[in-house]
Image (cartoon, rainbow, N blue to C red; front, side):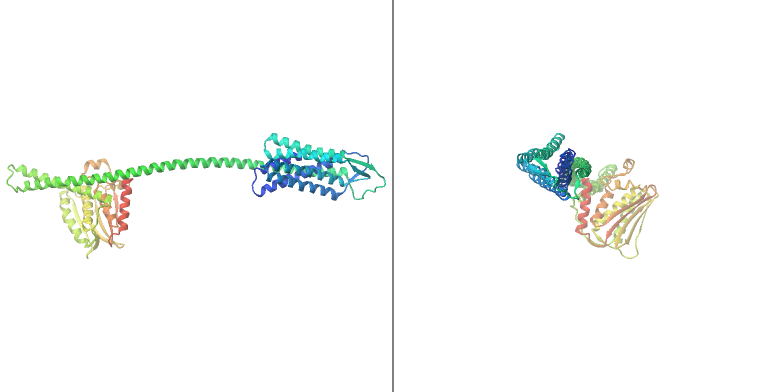
Length: 509
């Protein structure tokens, strides 16, 4: 029963195995089944009491064991290779019944006894039929499932097949004592060999059971890990779906933001153009009235009012022009006219232009340039616009009696324009906000100082369109240094495209 239960368990392991381990389990099941049949036969011989001395021939005893193991292996191999066919499984069961029969009759042929042995053909046939009759359902039960009831039923059927064959086969044997028969000197007593075989087989069966239990535990652990992995994969797939959904939403939001940005840009451009036409008319008429081109206005205040209207209109026109420039740099519509020019002349022009504003604010404006000419490359008008914006910001944010310096130098193969002041300064966290379009560093400054916050980011955009960069160093309460680096060559299309891409990305974000 122990060997049969182990055999059934080992066959059950085959269904969960893969690769070479399948053959290992089939071989193990065949070894246990053959050994169990062999042990059952010789232990049962101990119950045979003919009243004569009984011994065994070692060679035939071993051959009977090998035959049982080999035929059992063939039986399991046939049944498992045809596990989808009941006929194939039945054929494997029939071979297993023949394995049991072969083991018995080869083992009996190795029986040494001082008697003549005769056989009853009917009982021999009946023993083989009974063995096959119970081995077929045993094989069907072993290969059809791994439930406890099937394992126990298969164990019982296989055990009955072995015992039915043995005791029916022993019934078929008749002995006639003959004292003239001389027994071999090297025969082994039956009780000794039976006990030895039983102990050896029991050990093998126990080892097989242990291996089977360990393997079962490993298989269960593997299934648990597989289930855990499937759950983890399912969670990953769910997360992936969520990420895919978020990605689609982000793409839609990005497209919406890009569309909104384009609409905003188009609106600002159209509005700026629409505002400039009537504003130019207002400035022109105010200038005519201020100059009294068509005659005196009468009261002197009217001329003063006309001057105020002209100045306010020009200020508003400057703001609109800056907005339009921001729109052009953002949309990539601004075209640069690259030329070679003397940067010192441009610095002198900006100084003379902005010094009047500095004096109004009680500020000292100076400039520092090299002794020789400094050649610059780019759109002279736009680079001059950068300097005007930077000096204008310095004048705006520097208290009275402060100092502003406009510098020019060459560093690492680049032309450097630098504006430094002793103004209010900015912290490291405020600088990014100052570089945003229409951004100022805080509400206090927004109330205290005029402006839309477009001069600094516009200057940065223009520098990048030239293939250069704008850098800011600032300390609150001490002052600010803004440096513009321009390459010694015309801005390439690649630089223009990169600057445009950065600006569009920032606007979309």
